[in-house]
Length: 329
Image (cartoon, rainbow, N blue to C red):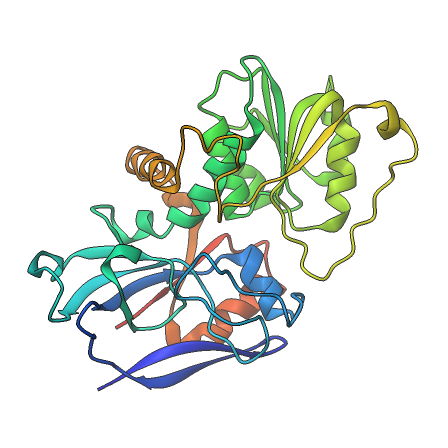
């Protein structure tokens, strides 16, 4: 029996290769993938060769090992069914739907403790990692009642962050993106208004209290700092890869007392570790996804054998696509 696995093989090059479907070891299960989702922020850096080759993929995810050197398997949003059990695994795991932080492939082995059993639909479950990132950004930002907030970048993570913030009693929630389709989505998810980057400063009556930079565009961090008020916070969720970030820190910034804070989902910030762990955060994510209709984010679905078309779409026509998923037959 053979399955399929997606490989990044070079700049703007992906291949779907045949692979043997393995039998699980004693403490493993085998999962047959139903759907997997592209995370366009990180995966487009890999696709465009904008990640340092020697950089580790993610030491907190068991299914990802090695560095970002080609060829590599990558991805971390997979939903499927458990189809086979190792001899030491409880029979209750058989036929469970599970979410896994696993690369794009039709079948894979995993230890049960690395899987997230879910009753969510495959579509909603695919949003778990990006929704977890959004929850992490908001936890690190700690928005106060009546705060003015702006979210720069309305890709999947930015839209989820906007949707989450819309449930807070904010005075103003502004979304910023260069693509009109994404701005419309922002407003449908609860943003008070959405503007293009060049209209950012004119759209604000007052400086923001907290600004989220989630665009992946190095120039946007300077914009985020410039619209944030005295002693405000800038939450940087973007990963710029090898791209350099130009900043103007020579004028108002020097006296601004603005806090610039990185926020990344792999670990819980020590500020929260007294009361929070990853399981508690994940429980919040699953509950929110169960209650929130985010189906509008899914704009395209491809058979995994057409993966090259999916990545070209995101690379060349990002105004047409938001969340792209693969299906496996």
